[in-house]
Length: 189
Image (cartoon, rainbow, N blue to C red):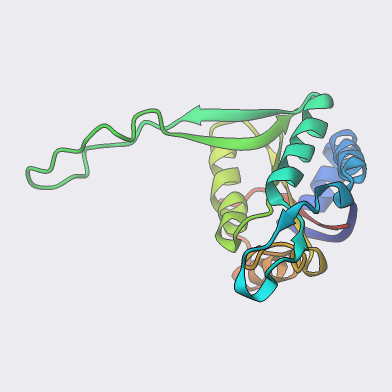
């Protein structure tokens, strides 16, 4: 695959290029290694795309995982211990949420990477919540979010978010004082 869009959120590009250039070059190599044509394996059952061959987000994620792991990048998982003191009245929570966790796709040398071929809310969550949480937990200093551009997302199931809409929203939202530097990379076939 190839990078066709670059967006710097909260000086992400500038900081990553200056302080994490080695990790960035490796991420660029990982992206270039994934062959998109090998992952156009999903036959759509959607009404508007019936029978059409689409890129499989599962297959793409698996390919990225294999490449990142080959280069020594690992996922990072933290256990969630949810507070219970905020319940009111005589409500007693069940414990079905024990074992809950949050996970960053890939981490190395204080750089967190998320590869997202899912719904729009996941992109926003990754950059505006998850990366901030992992920074607060002293796991990462910067983040990189890898997402498809519109051209690529158009060859996936409906509802897959894409670079252009994500950049527009981040521009309109602006930067908060809790946001960390993040580089958004838009990719296509």
